[in-house]
Image 1 (cartoon, rainbow, N blue to C red):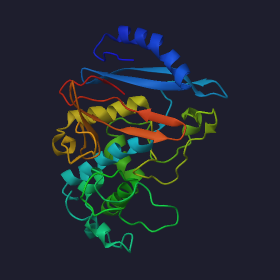
Image 2 (image 1 turned 60 degrees about the horizontal axis):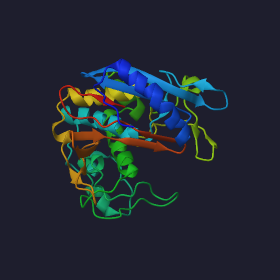
Image 3 (image 1 turned 180 degrees about the horizontal axis):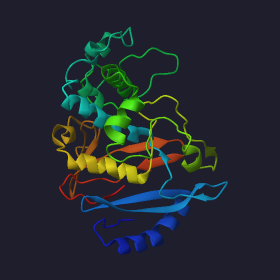
Length: 298
């Protein structure tokens, strides 16, 4: 389905009502939420289906979804704030900020910088095998390799520099100021009534993650409207270095990675994007063209 995000809202709503329900049935998606940005503002949200198949509770504007890796660009915004305040240098080894050692046994980890983390050039695996030491797969800075472990390393530095837990720091510097008031990196009691239940292809239910401690790489819950607020914040500030390619992705010259965002060259111009994926709850946010008047669907 291809939709024009600059079409009148009434036209889009009619298109959604016609096209989305059969697509959901075809793909086995119980429910979803969409948000539309037009003219640089959050113009509307639409909800379809149910958030819990067993109870039939519908998806509505308050429904929160497991953000999974959509946690990363929110965290990157918090890192940017520290850089703007002069507390963190993108190119200084993270080891120099920590009072204690990190992942003893692989000295190459000591060369990793915040820039490498945010652009996935740490050389670290996405996640280490349970119970095993963290080691690099390649020398840091030698190409793209998606890594949640890198984000956890940078999280430790952020928490030490600020003296706050990640949840408290990001709430104070990003989530609350941006109006992302439904979003948290830890499970809160209100989520019991508004969080989605995921479903695998065979219909098996997947309960949401109830994180007690924030993880920069994956523990965020958020609404579709809150995702658009993050996109708008990225538009409203000078993207500059943060939306400039830091590393080319292998096998596709149209794809690169900036600082916290994936980047893509499209027929309509440059775009930034990110996905989040959790068992039973696949997500993909809409591509967003970096212009003064963004129009996108998240």
